[in-house]
Every structure is written in C-alpha cells, then in structure tokens.
Image 1 (cartoon, helix red, strand yellow):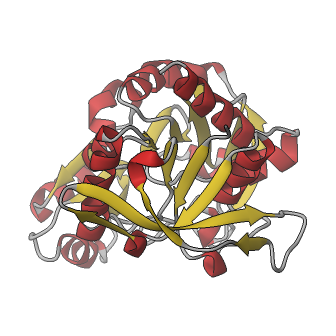
Image 2 (spheres, helix red, strand yellow):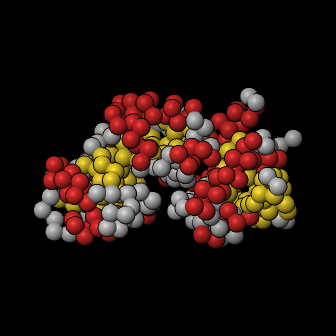
Image 3 (cartoon, one colour):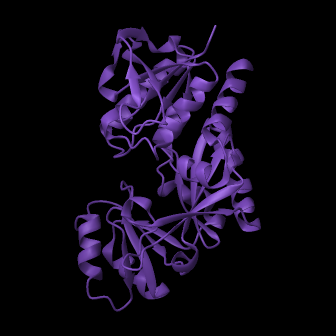
Length: 319
C-alpha cells in the first residue's frame, strides 16, 4: 500500500512551478508512488481532540508552466491516518501558525510523522535559534533596548539590523556607525522599545561571496550551497530581493558548521533545514519552509526532493 503524505502549504495559485521547493518535494513523492494530499491551514481543525482536515488529492506536472496541478475530490480525513505531513506554509510566523502546530502535535500523537517537528517549529525562531550555536555565528545582539543597539553599532562600526519575524529580505537594514538613520531604524524595528529585534556584525563577504543557503536532510548537508549574490543596488542576499543565485561546492568551514548544527537539529525532528552562511558564519537557521531546491537541482543535476522523500520513507519504514 502506498504512503499517504499531506502538504500544508500556501495556495497553489501563489506558487511558481519553475522554482518552488514544495512542488519539487511533491514531484519526488509522486515518483515513489506516494499518494499526495494538499491543504491550507484553514482546512485543519480539532474536534474533541482529534486532528482532522479537508484534504484534496494532488498531482503535479512540473513540465507545465500553466495548469501544473491537478486536484481530486476533497474529503475529510483524520490527520493521524497520514503517514507523513509536511508543514510548508511560508511565514509570517504568527499565532495562527502556532495554533496550526498544536493541531500537528495531535496528528503526531496519532501516528503521523511531521516534517518538521511541531515543537521544533515553535521553539526554533530562525534568527533567535542561532544563539544555541554562538561559536558558529558572528557577534549578535537580540534586544529591545535602542541604546544597546547604538552601542553595538558603535563597537562594530557596521551592522545588519532586522526584525525577528521577517523573511525574504524584508525590513533588513545595513547601518554604519555614522548613519543618521540609525535611530529611526532602531525605533521602527523595536517599535520604540516594545519589540525585540536582532543586530549582527556586518560580514563583508556578502558582497563577493553572497549569502549561501545550505540545505540539510536529516542533519546531512547537500554537497552544494546556493550563494545568493546581492545586486549592485541592494545589500540583501535574498532571491526575493533581486539577488542572483549561484551554486558552489561546500567548503571546509561549511562542513564544520553543518557538523555542529545538523545532528542536533535532526535529533529534534527537524528533517529539512536551511542554514544561511555568510563568510565563515551562520546568520539564520531556517526550519519553517526552506527553499533553494530547484536552483541547486538545475545547476548540479541533483534531486534534493527525492533525497528528502527517501529519508522520510526510511524513517517511516523504521517505525
């Protein structure tokens, strides 16, 4: 009997079939004869403690730029009847996202393998969780105190400041010690000291080598990283902000960073993770919906989605 797998994701019409990592995973699941279901967060609920969902069978054809997805008949299923559930909803990581992880906790208790583990999704803020691996990171301050942010900027001369909840390069500021906009940036990001923000020492390698995304499957890195090189008119190494993605082989420092972080995350049920590396340092640990599969697959002839699905299949077989 084929595996049944559910992908909780963004609306299909919002996805770009030529680059979406979730679709690559679904395509790989189909190649293993898994039966794939699709749902939005709004399709899930709890009734008397039982996790349920209105799930729709889904097939994808990534050779098609239009009409790449075919949907079957939606029906109510117990989430515990799924072999695996992939939480691939993009941030924002808000209270609705957290409520969804509670539903997924109940699905896990009912027998489904959740990728990534719901408790890990709640615990591992993608910027804050770097604090658990400070030896792998450049100097970082997470605070509400704007005076402390000014002092940090003065200490390092140049710094990157961003909110804790953002994604895709949104609201990232690069400041130098003499920038007259520093106060307004700190006021905006902390909402005058009422919210935490993060400020990190600026790593100059971002200009030449970019912000490298390293993908880990069950704690093990893929052999290539996607270096996202900022455009000439922008500081941000994010594809969504106009950076160019260039693949490169992992370097010795990359492998060391992955060895420090990957096994610990895998032990906590984080099966698919993206590390963001600038120069010698990890800047973020992405656990919600890491991307980069399609770009690396295209440049190096990989099939990272299949590597992931085979890892999930092995976990299910070992139960």
